[in-house]
Image 1 (tube, rainbow, N blue to C red):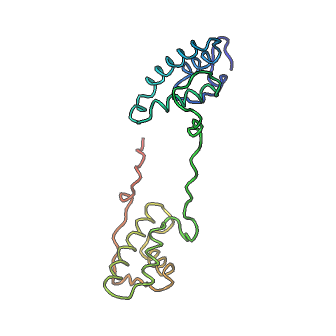
Image 2: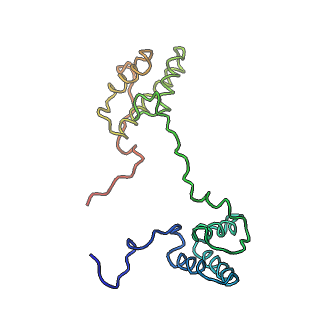
Image 3: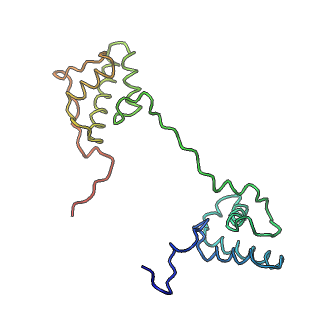
Length: 198
């Protein structure tokens, strides 16, 4: 629905740097269209002064002035013809998107157990039988049970943990549930905050 006289953001040009707001962008557009170079220069300095007030956290950076001038250069679509006090040729770095961090998916048999537990399975397979392996087995089994509780993947029983532990250690670790009692895992162990019921 369009109402005559109302100016919606959805009808306006997209802001290159929304953190500075539309008024600063209008000032930049105005400065670009000035015909006198000295006026453009003075206007650019005033715009920088205004930009400083919009993002005061930039003052914590050692090169905050360079950053402001780089931003001005980008906001002007590289059209502002002034004597730049800083080299703005590398300003495009602010528009580069960071590379995606690759996730270690290969070899993950059950994602709800996670990479660290998978590494523990491998360690348990190669450890000699004894008290140290028994202790690590106990801690690993309890962490598996907590993970099952947290991520809600089907059964959270001790039998499920014992079965998975045997499977992922290629049968090396066999939990005797008649002798080993795993800790009780509850939803309270879940680190995610619960929504309050209304």
